[in-house]
Length: 414
Image 1 (tube, rainbow, N blue to C red):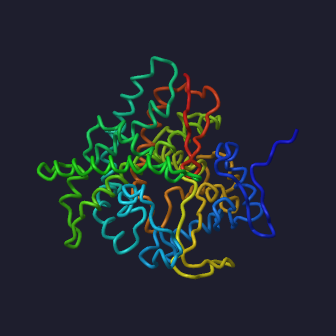
Image 2 (image 1 turned 90 degrees about the vertical axis):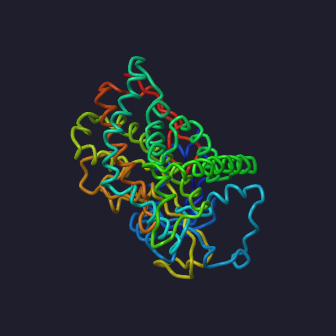
Image 3 (image 1 turned 60 degrees about the vertical axis):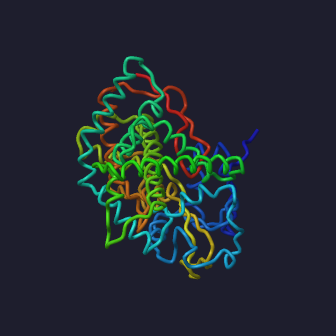
């Protein structure tokens, strides 16, 4: 009996239907992307109700287009957009998001980014290399003798959580609680979220915000060499962060500072082990490690869709976009565009063109990109040196959160 297709494409209407909650899709979205590239890489996604762009050229260009933004309330009202009033039961979540760098537009975005950018420039991040290497060894010491591990929880998750907590000045013993708050808040970005998810995310945001306010109050009288102290003391053109801005910024950095890196590390380990290539040669030196991580970022990205609001009426190529609309930029699809990449569905760390849009582009390019790259280069080099016979045990399965493309678990043996 033939299997039910996971998607349909209406070429005449430039539309496609594909349920993001369908396990056959979120386990392998690339079949859908391949079909889009072969037919209509610009399309209206029925389930989302807006235009989406899958071509590398389009995604890269639209990330940088100032006629699009991560928020729109600075140029329009809810009444003008026909939006309902904010949900009363997500007020804490909305407050935590309100001053997030992820959503702000200039000039607020410019001011806040200047305040935090210094901690994430490459020369500052490079200082963390010994710390990441020591941490990777300590984690492997804890499970090497067992001959098996679930590598997401045992290795991929602790490294970025601990590193970003140390950078910010959050006690390491809070790592498990930070993960709990983060995972509950991230569920707000799931397709088809419900009120139960919204209320739980709001409770997590309330608790997370309260913790950051308490920590900031303590740190004001005990400034240290950490990012929270820097944010409390920093001035950019005479302007300091308000407490609400501080709370939003710290929550964003803690959430974004681990969520995508955890997924990408797991995806990368899976890709490497399935490729049949010798992992030790892929991390033989710093140059090889960097090339392998870039290919892993391209091949199986941790974030597959970012949305943008249309800030003014304009036509992109032959698509008329209207102020207030949402568009979707498909990072995972762009990274597998056959127009841009030769044999895009092959994992090839030696490929000449390693460009990818996994960290976005434009003013919202991921501020933590240097940190994520370093963590993956160092941690996976240690992993494959310590466990040269590492191999998969069972079939890895991805989580039911399409936008955040990461494994539920990754069981390995050696």
